[in-house]
Amino acid sequence: KAGEKSDDCLFCKIVAGEVPAEVVGQSDSAVAFKDIDPKAPVHVLVVPRRHHADVGALAGASPEVLADVVGLADQVASDLADGQYRLICNVGPKAGQTVFHAHAHVLAGTQLAGF
Ligand code: 5GP
Ligand code: ZN
Image 1: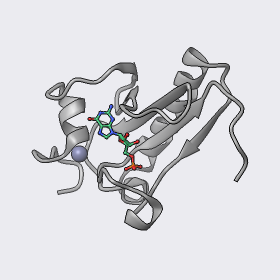
Image 2: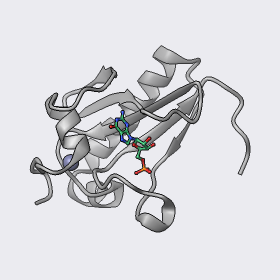
Image 3: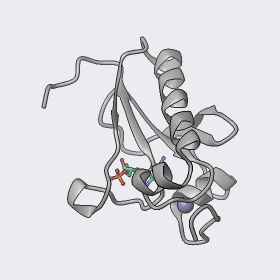
Image 4: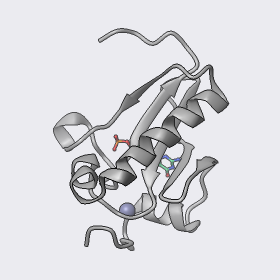
């Protein structure tokens, strides 16, 4: 159910400390940790502590938490890089979403290719 911990959700387990991850930032409602397969010198995932399937569901249920996710992303990009970053949210398999707990990718630390 939205907002509740899901026992078979990888990112719920990371938030709960049941699966290890390299945490690089935290707020009341969000956690930031390094992506296991980095696509840039800095590649961090920022996730709400509570479970939502994707950022669209999060935006509908808790827009203030979505704002907190973006704020934590900005802070991590300043802490680990120079404050310049790309924020990517994949919603749905067609967009490449593979973990169905809302998350934002923070890519930083290099000149990123245009798209
Ligand atoms: P998506 O494709 O759903 O937008 O992004 C999921 C991301 O989670 C991928 O970039 C993938 O590398 C990352 N990921 C998958 N499994 C793990 C894990 O066990 N630990 C961490 N830190 N990242 C993971
Ligand atoms: Zn979850």
